Length: 94
Image (cartoon, rainbow, N blue to C red; front, side):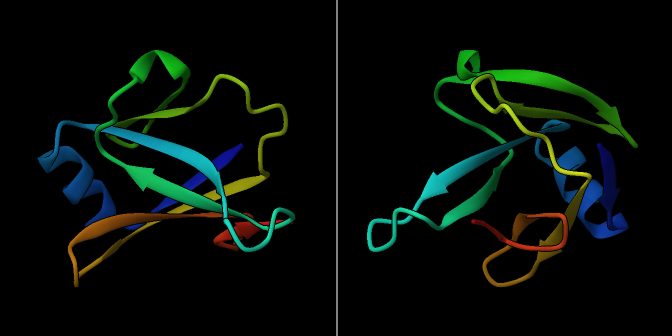
């Protein structure tokens, strides 16, 4: 898996502790569509496994995740200030 992160995202992740947790969530309305959620902290870190250190931050993915993307894009957003992840260029997985 190749991680492509913007400089702004790297800076924001570093500012918040240097760890990024990416999880897959299912939307209530559509069970076939799953969205990516990126956070710099989680309540249950034991549910994640380290996917390595990428350009200054440590990446964590769910332990139960069977298939990894070819690319994981990480970007920073301003309002509200947050980190977002895109799996092979998409925010959703079908």
